[in-house]
View: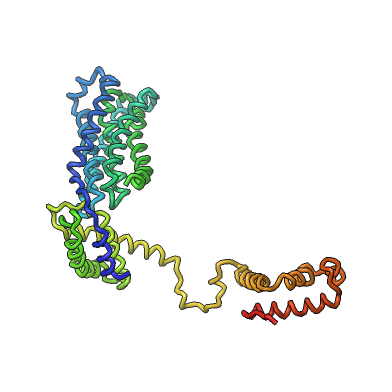
Length: 214
Length: 178
């Protein structure tokens, strides 16, 4: 088909469309769903008794800050990735926050293992926390897929990856508020492990979900 | 573009017509080694993608970066696809038309011949088909065929001869209605 004919056909089949909100507005909607769920699960699971002490520790605040930064930048990048006119730096912005967060967690794990002289390698199987962790990640992930269904027209894999990283980071942001992580293995398995698991699962399945919903 | 989002067909047609030479020029500038057909494919894919994602455009921003962004993404996709397929493709001009490499399966020629024979057989009359089936396919003797058909040996010989003649005619593409 000649391009001129295609132009004519496209113009003939034109229907009015509802304009999609900006990435910032979509992120605000996602936070509107995500934050109440995170708050509800945190309160349901009961705050850690030593939280007041932790909140004044720079180490704790730094990890939480990096988790929040990863969550926000990933969500924004997910909504930007589907648009063709967004600069590349916005799409890779969450990677910087995520790497810093990973580095900080690694440093803390190292310090813990040295301080406890090997006891940090013991893994506490806190299975009762799994439903709460799943809930805090799945609800933001579902909201993300719903909001991405019309916006992820380009770079869908990047959108899905950033979207699930945002959901996993959201879960990780609230996890230390109700769940103690005393050993290195607990931090690695329950905290970073859940982030990696949810991000990978989300990236694998979200494209399917987007294709069905879009 | 804002008018196109509202459903204005004339504004949209004018926009696309104006975008066409611009897109060709930008595509040629970005991929100078691409063939003319590839450039046209990229332009058409860009137009289709623009049509499907026109709800993503924000009228407050300039349209050119939006359009060029689509061209970059779709163009790179087409280049990747071409590159991937190039390793698995062979130019047909380089090989004789009767080469075995063009066959999709080993029994292809045999299958074609069998199909032709079946078609020719089907075009024959019921008596011819019966005689050929008994004497040529099942390879019964004249006496055995006599028992099955009730015809005499002489009649079977004549019928068999005529059936073979008609079959030859049918295989050549005509029918013998004598």
